[in-house]
Image (spheres, helix red, strand yellow):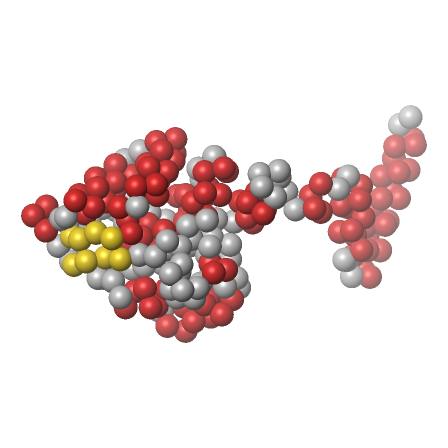
Length: 210
């Protein structure tokens, strides 16, 4: 993470909070990072503040837009082990609600309506497929996927959808043998034949050793 150089005389009260947050986030471990994110999210200082580049305004579902402008990446937040906190954070960056009035603007609109920070453009942590394609077509950054992506990953999304009951997909709760059977059913004929032969060989080997 990088921290932009700011002129303190241009900061308003929220701007000073944001600046202090950015400085601390650049030099902490994941435990302290979790505390700082939780505190900043709750403070609402990130929603509206001023620095030397101008006045910023973010909607309640644009916390990832704010974080990306502070040099905080999706991967940084993903590494925090507290899934309950990540579910709270995700509620403030739900890409499925992009375009919903007073919740979340499309990322290109948010960029156009906020000051641009050199080297730290507003980026979405998650996006719908339509927005992913728009980003690919309007940026020079290669390697971006055009598929939809949950803001903080599928396990956090499941945790939220199940009210904290599980991070696992239904298929992940099946017995191992059933998961392997389902995987085998997706193989092509040649690969399935090779698998059957290998299993028969393993079965014969076990019989010889018992």
